[in-house]
Image 1 (cartoon, helix red, strand yellow):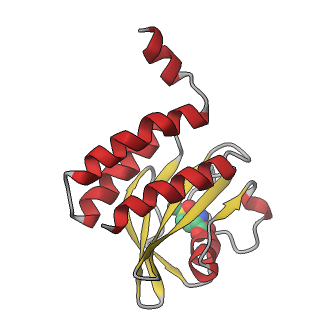
Image 2: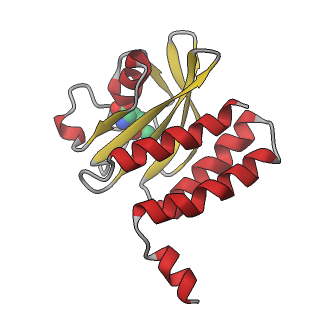
Image 3: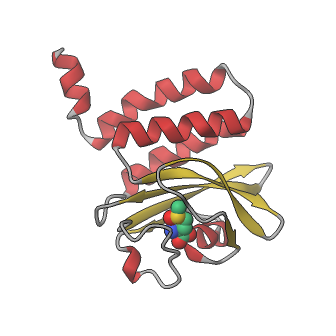
Length: 157
Ligand code: SME
């Protein structure tokens, strides 16, 4: 009981430390990318109580909506557009502490206040991004970047 409470109320770092072995266990048992994306979106969403957690997959010159948790989202994003298209174009994680201050942010939900987008790689190319939105300002930092990059790398296999 005490341990359970500690995990629930634990720091962001503790939550990732608890989550990562669980994600590895789930991924090890399943090779289907969409199935793993679906469970990963759920695990992240439930653990942290984010507003929107999901994936966009690269399809030609666009990102197309993949498995997610949260409210309805836009289905297609052009390369370089919004936070997702920017992370894809730059080929690096983008942290946005205040979406209103990010030029070109695509507001799928007016309640979203901060965001992180993490590119996912296969054979030297970005094939998808993980997008997470929060209803609070400045939710995401280097701890999220480090752990989310580690977690999405598990989807490569
Ligand atoms: N805000 C994103 C669009 C996707 S939704 O947040 C789910 C963006 O600017 O790329």
